[in-house]
Amino acid sequence: MALDVNNKKISKQLKFAKEHLEPGEKVMEGVFGAYETKSLGNDTVKNGIFLATDRRLFFYGKRTFGFDSESFPYSNISSIEFGKKAMGYTLSFYASGNKVNMKWINYGDVASFVNYVKTKMNEKNKSSSESLTEKSAVDQVKEMKELLDMGIISLEEFEVKKKQLLDL
Image 1 (cartoon, rainbow, N blue to C red):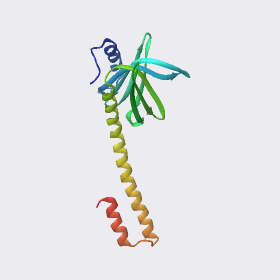
Image 2 (image 1 turned 90 degrees about the vertical axis):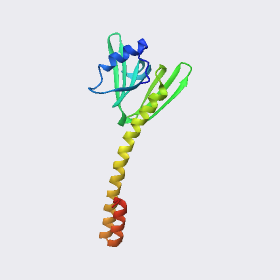
Image 3 (image 1 turned 135 degrees about the vertical axis):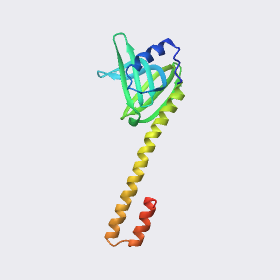
Image 4 (image 1 turned 45 degrees about the horizontal axis):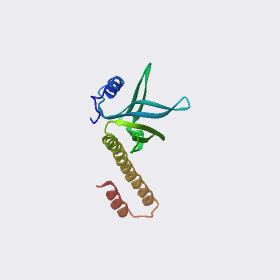
């Protein structure tokens, strides 16, 4: 993990955040900064830790009385980007159509964090594109069968195309 667990601010947030993880969930990467969000219709900034676990992105911010948390499954994240400004790194991603921002990141390896998230996003995209490819091949065979039934193609043409589509 690229998160500096020897830093008091980070270790305290991490300790409390772990209490809210799912059983068996592992923290892989993490960054500490200010999370920009809306609360009760108002723009707010919450200091805390963004954790990339083996299952999701998880924000946790300990407050004087209570805490703030938000969870983002990798399957809902469509893009992620980061940059560096005078006050530290910035991190943005889109989850379920909403833009999520974190700024003033001065603790944690942002590049490593982003690379890990991209890897998890690619796993999600790869599995969904594989199922789309399979589905589209079956759909194409169905379309070819309709053409056969209408007499537009011959049985030979249908069998050849079916073998190509289904890799038989």
